[in-house]
Image (cartoon, rainbow, N blue to C red; front, side, top):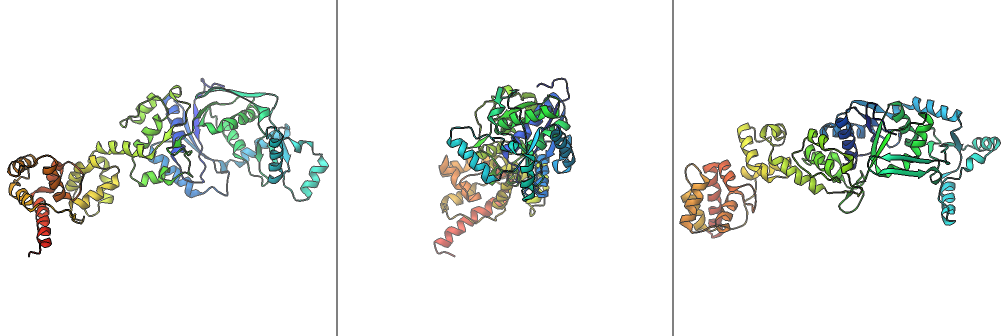
Length: 465
């Protein structure tokens, strides 16, 4: 059912039972882009009905992750604080005969499903509990068995909706089991609590993974029971999988958790730009802002195939973003990681020298060590004659172009034969920033010291004083 005339209200509803991962972020991001494009409210709801597994630590990390990503919510709720509302709606449904108590154990239910499957019958709950008499129920409860409750689906109908991603979807309700809504301990199940929340909070559009499609069919019938026949518009996103084919979840690798991406020096723009365009016809542009992503957002551009998520793609985008970051944008973080380098001018120079050669911010400290002599000298032996020529041709201004021109003329070397020994002499590394930037950063005195150190190594190896 469309809700074009109402204020658009969407919700992101993570469970605080683990780390927020790339798949969660994609769902949150699509909700956020959609509601910001069309106006309305983005609601954050912490689905903590599972009190045994939910933790305040996980909730705190979720809030930190969303703040880091720049996804701002307009309203905030916790399911654990809405129990009275669930109880109120449950009693209403009980009075209307739409819920009923059941007494089967997990083992008995498993046996029923196995028997149905072996007989070629769909493993749908047989509503055996509805056949019990009041006396039989009383005896079961007196024996210590606590009932759980199911919602009685209108199995003569078909749940149908126009999905914003998949188009028309139809699921006959006689092909699915009556959903459990209350557990034996009295706790409310997500399937039910979520519908009550969505109805009570006026959610107009539910955007989530397509693993919820069957769940949606069930929930539409619950919506109809408590909302006089109305229900939200749905959009089911194809689930991402990692490059090895696994579904992306909090259980498939710590590298995919937002906490670990944050600590790894990933910029939020890198993750957002990849996820917003992955699985769509849009090109991935690392320069995209939230404003441009909102403008480009359209469910019609989505593919129905499961997109492949690769953390290396995030790192590639991150490298491009880093290369364009100005010093003032990273100054605070650099000050925290480069505690030995207190001179802002030198820190600025270091950043301009290396930013095109790092994949994440934390790698700056490595180059700080390289340029300040904290890296052990390489064992690669350089030619003494060429080292002396380096010293003899080094201009007082340490002008790179002037130095290389003279060195090329006096040595007769060119290409790798010319530049590789210079790089080894100055950094002891095969690769790195442009030599011109390195020379400018080090200055004449530091360059002379490094060349002489290699000359001294040669002397030591030859047994001379």
